[in-house]
Length: 305
Length: 254
Image (cartoon, rainbow over all chains, first blue to last red; front, side, top):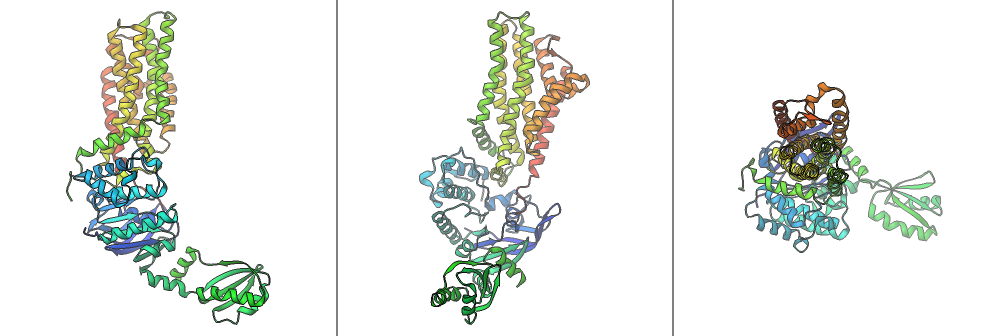
């Protein structure tokens, strides 16, 4: 397997007055890359441009040096797993994969189909109609359909959406295995943990711009270095505030709208500390909510930082 | 990686199979089959009732008003807009677009399958209704109705398939064309009949039947014109559909 090389240079895409992607550039080779961003950040637009389905409004998108839009050869080098769950429900899993093989003009299609079905572990269910599949199985059938022509680049749009934890783990293993074969894999997600667990590299997009890219650990460190805010509801907010403000893990305390807001310097140390303090002071904690853990706030921090 | 060069017709077979599978067994398709039985039932009722005058005129009237006026356009509308429209609507069209297959082949497959489904019902309904009314006494009329049914099936389907690529409201727009334009405007304003699929089919039927037409079936477009315009409709619909699908862009901001 020779990995495909995906290259974006100063790529923008707008729909009328709406800018979906704004001056994005990156280059990808073998391995798993996660495309992380909140909903509406431009992830699907980027993936569709890489798959040759959308023409960039400005800039160039290439796979193995070929401009993706308007070049049918690119379709042979890229496999796309779309986000939309709908498939041709009346087809069996095998017929669906076979259809994709035939439309790709895959030689020795029968073997290729069986190989793709085995890769996603669907051989046993291959004779059932797709409508009878669970979400996870359907997702795997879509991956098999995108793999059957053995592309060097595999692009997956929100592959973990709607999956239960077991299906999610299975898909993560599958992506890692496919990358080990030497493929270039790019998947999008709006969930930090999913990306963290599979991707070696991360591209963070916010508002159509590339906010950060590179090794996941570095980005994660940026995220954990910032102060964490928590909102608490307790039996005695003032007493607890007085008790914890002296701790080194706490950067600031405030009382806002009947809630105690604590800014902690270290996420793990603070949450470990808190229970002991509350018990010592005889205060009950009714509620503890991380106030800025939403992905958007992480992104906001990255964009600023 | 080898395989057929892009542009080879090898993809037509799988696409035809896929589209046919999508039409078979859908509730709408069953409704169309029931609809196609209507002219046959009407003909049967008339035949049992002992007829109402000249049977050839009656047969032409039943064909012209029910089969050609209602059954064929509605069947073509259902099959034509479903052949590609369903895939466009639910997003499965993506699986066809990310392939090294010319978009015109995708359009061609949809038109072939929808035409076959429509024509099968249309010709069967025309012949059965005709046989019930005229028996084997007017072979020219039967042939005329069969050919006209086939022609109308092709024309309505190519128009509606292309319509479904341009708009997600193809069913509504198509219904408007059938009911408002062909059902109202062209019946009131004779000059507009030159732009009516129904008129092309009627001319064809009457020419083959060898009659001037009477009652509901009147020829207002000459046969050579009707055939030339039919050819133009097929060519224009196919080229427009292929062009539009060729620049079809999937996905939206997000």
